[in-house]
Length: 390
Image 1 (cartoon, rainbow, N blue to C red):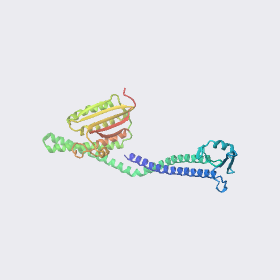
Image 2: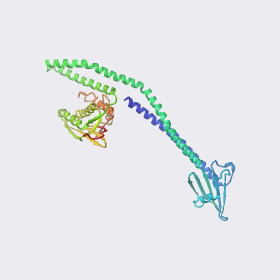
Image 3: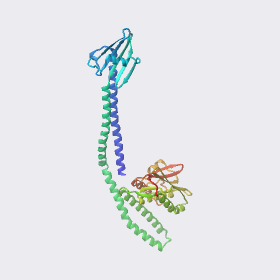
Image 4: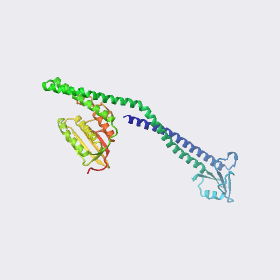
């Protein structure tokens, strides 16, 4: 849980910092592009004025070509410092151009306007400006990813410092639960043994029977707490091939007796030879918990469906029972000590079964989710299945 909290903090922080940095760089590039367009527009206007005023000479190489139709002659004007184009090259570029239009090619901008005796054309060579803009974009991209890399390292280090007190509190909480549960096992075992001895001498005593039932419920709670503490403390699972098809069939067979006692029918649709990769003990407990939960909360005469399918190197196990869950209940159904139906206080459950299932799935890198559609609650387990069992 602490690692998930740390990951959420890292990715949320990186998202907002990345969005802020992207907006800043984007606005910088956009402002530069607008400024470049204004510079080119001013240079073209200077060319078409044909004044030759040195005080207003643009920084970009700019030329003006005047064509006099009666004499069929051309005159080239422009910044005398720029000698990149001559009359012939400009004439070839502008003769076939439409009037009152701007053409751009390889960073060169051309505009042509009609005059009384011919036309006037302006040329602005903005290739250097364009190259500078492309260089700005390239540097912005490099700056973005470089800065994001540095920020990621900084945020990751900061997240470890931030969650350290939470981690210490969480570890202390887990140690307390594990130690308290372990210490309670011995006196509870003695209580159960004494109850059984007393019941043997007085089997009709309702007080002894109630005491024994409550002690059994307490024992199940302690074992569940120890299981949660165990999964919290265990390292990452070491998966191995598990015949999930055979496992599901075995657990379904084991659940028939309890389902019959609850007047519930179990239906199976299990594809054969589905191989999953997880710890065998974890896989058995995960499937057993989901099936047990479905049988427990299915209504009388209800049907519990166990479906296992494999497709494209992945498997999906669905355990479905009739019922409904609100969106809020589905959001908390895997929380510890949460019970979707508070009225069921004496069903032998403390709301830890699905929490244990979630821990098992997370430990084995499996996806466990819940959906509720058309009056049916479905718990789904998804994971990799590389090949069939031979």
